[in-house]
Length: 393
Image (tube, rainbow, N blue to C red; front, side, top):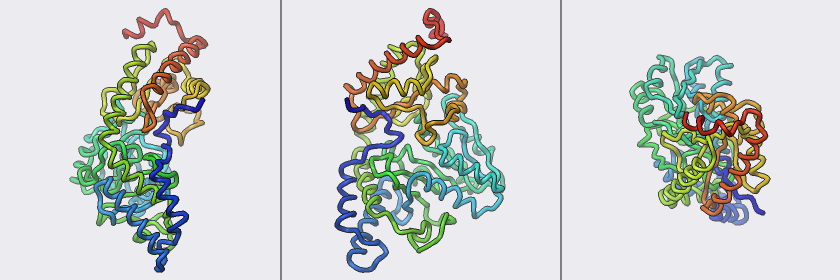
């Protein structure tokens, strides 16, 4: 049987409209966008149309969009690009960032920058007051994810932006898991930089963008031609970016209706899980969350074993970030939220998308309940006769 896909936070299938835009660019308008002849200018027109579509999705000006190879490069360009202008300065981020941002900050620490990693509460929320208290005279940048890729908890970006704006400190927002799922308006968020990734919103892998507010100084990561207004050298990936532009247009058109549909599916799924699987609990349930994602803890079950069991049953889910798959350590996000290590290893992330429907989810629920029961029976710590007392606690 074909697999039912519930891992849209790892990557999304390419939208047909995105592929059509890419096909035309590959085979019909294949010129170099920097060439002045008609084929080059046709490619340039595709590139700028894509830029306008991404800008519209984010509430930005087209000139503020810098195309990249994905979210990781966009995060690196934002964080390193600001840090390079403030050698040995101070950066502020959180303990629950994606590795693309977190490991960039750790690398900068090795090179002499100082970094403050802010904690989060049990719901996975960072406090704007903690951001304010972390600021120093030499703070150059605050970098915060808008929605965590594992828990989908949405951070209070506007409150944080009020703090950074008052202190005249640049704010970078990692919106890789938010763009296309949440209404993103860079003016309302009052951020200086914002990262997105194409393959998280039904565009092609290997594409992304960084919003750079007009007037924000940024050191490029590498050097070459004058592409992207000298902020990102290299011949642009016109076919991929045409696909990203098409995906951005589709996301903007379907944002409200798809968010409502996915919220209903997610909430119905969570209610069913909690009603049928003893001790299961939703991580970050009391916080605002992205509509398509549910992270659920199944005590006395190893998450990796449950992923494999569901995969064998025809369902694709994950334990967390795809970039961290194969890691022996439990999720740094869940540990930062205060989960014990054994519980952090027992969590699964279910991320729904355009192909998800209730019949698929019903089938997932049946396979999930059976797999949890089977794996718990093999667990030496599982005592079903104690379950009601634990559930009441």
